Length: 139
Image (cartoon, rainbow, N blue to C red; front, side, top):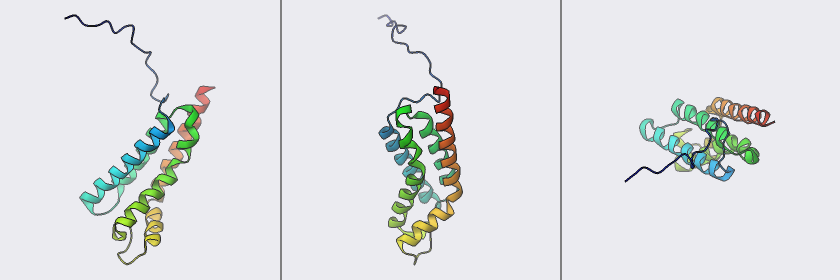
């Protein structure tokens, strides 16, 4: 049994920042990864902390690098929506995870957003800067 000739199937190696994924695929993956990071940290430490923040920033960067140029807007608005949705889901699961036990869901969401505002700012900035640099590189 011989090995098939793969030279005809080879594609040129593309730089890491030249993403080809559709916006909907990137959003679905970002949501799944963010919720996985939140669930993992909650399981091991009973709250959201630095691990979640670092994962969130990395997810924002990865999303901006892998989306195709036609879907930049989709990923450009993703970080705040992703953080807010995560806090809502966590608060519905138990407000004590991101706020005080007696707080309402709305209070818990606001508290969670406030506690993770630095990660949100950095993740959003990294995402937007990456998209701008990719847009300039395309010209």
